Length: 293
Image (tube, rainbow, N blue to C red):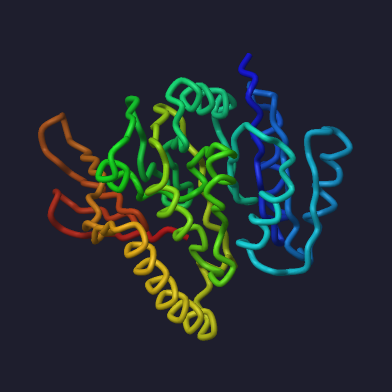
């Protein structure tokens, strides 16, 4: 049994439909030395009541209530409430879950063995029905170039050393309500002594209806446009501060599955992109596009 403690920080807003599954996927992990900090960001549904029910069953769970201030503030408040001097931090979302009950055991084993400031897992997008990235072997990035190449994963897939976050005063940018983890993620990537990959484990991501990322009303679109500009300014400042260049994202390469008749004739080809699936008859004629929720 591994001994290092993991603090799991979960910002929560109106997650009554999903928070139970999120918590269940943590409390039954094979690694039991865990504290779960749920930060209720002014939910108007029954989310807090559900968490209270779990607190009555499991003393490792704590609930912090705050007025609706956004996910970045919730994550920062959760981090500030951690009383450990060592151990590791995992930032989760309330509507996501872990399928593998040995997720934390494997992640922690890799983190300790490599002494990495950041340890990353793969990511499965439940909405799209496939993995964004699935690691099949161990890997350690030590140079800045290698670490930058590994950046393109959200904060949910990362297990951070608590001392690393504290020593570098890393926190989430409260001026950003969307992709608030991007600036922290880049700064952490540059400052980390090394980034280790834990193979054969996946974080299960769920894009829910009504989320900020999914909102399409005019106000949301204006807010996203303003935040993109602000995020760009902050990333430019970060590159100047640490003297590095954020690479232009490459065009996504789809995962291709071919369905053949008698193992010879390709009847249907499926191409899985990060946000949609495309189907082609005989490999060339587009017949269907299915977008992620």
